[in-house]
Length: 308
Image (tube, rainbow, N blue to C red):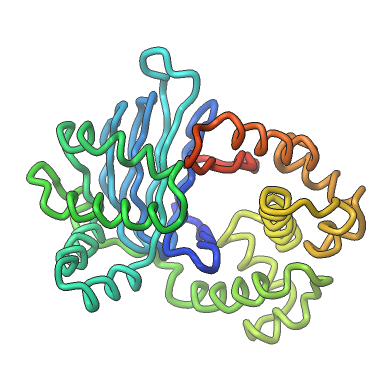
């Protein structure tokens, strides 16, 4: 079974992306992405698939994955009194790690950790338990403090004695060679032009394919149509503006590529299960409830279908 390509968008001005994923279940979702991924799984047990390695996982499962390593988690049951299957997921690039090592000798060991992670690395219960509160805190820290905390966590993982490799060797999906180059170009263009009317002709020219080939490659790589993918980008941008500004929805809509406020509301509700107004209100209530100095994670759009 070929894994599908997941586009992870680390926002401009950030070195990592932290996602507190809480779902009724982790459905089998065999995929890969160019970013490294650190995942702490909580309140869940099931099976973990990394490259050719399959093993059970439980509460406190802590794994680091290297770039383009196919993986999936499939839940079987909640553990303890957990209300949902939860995973704290942190994405960052191999290039960022390399730059850290080049500029900061004390962090040079992180490059070796990422090399190990090309096969997937699982950490023992002692390390996972010790780092659990610090990884959870990443969800609340503001940008600068968050990236410093992440560097400290990765430095601890680089010297953890209870780490073990997962897959027998680095395993890149076969589709990478040709489709990946095309998808990189297509996604770069879409991320720069998603707020415009999307036409297939420029994308076909970029990828050197016909319209039918373009649609087929895109669907095979992302499991989404181009229109659905662009809709997700637009909703994601709307989430950011709803959180960070007081702009009225009528102004946010055209900035994100929607025809008007009603169009934005329909697409936003379908993707997140909330109206734009309730999403903004929920985020502000969360910010008010947190102690002074804490930075709330935004209410996350629960796009469907979505697994691990």
